Length: 172
Image 1: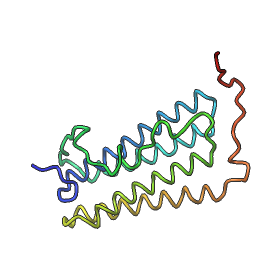
Image 2: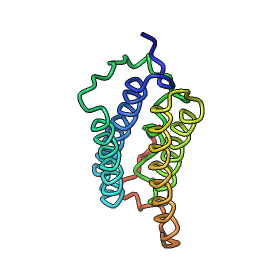
Image 3: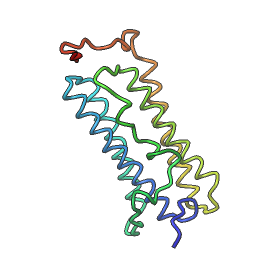
Image 4: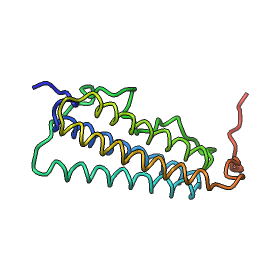
């Protein structure tokens, strides 16, 4: 059996499930980092975004029903980049990240996921894969629109850097 997410619904759903689970896991890890650095507002926002990814993963699992999905090994996934499109790189955030920067990153990730699904919908010859991919792309665009709305409502000072009460020191 080939592992083509464009043509086989179980493979497409395995990709989708992995994408959302990886996103949620990474967002929760980044939330924990923000908590360690006493950035409660960013911690809360990251937890909320992780919850949305978990909800999408639950939706994918409900579509699967009793159909077993192929268990792909990490190197068997073919993503547009190095990681799933909705997964934030660890180096993308630091304890100095602002709320605006975090929302911009989340917006970029949602747009990447929407593009990923839209590409599958366009290229797939399997009607069921294309239909689900269009639905998922639409959902990701809704998430992106919500994030854009949050960004638009941020006060001007939302891009201020936090005060570092214990900055790193250079040893000579």
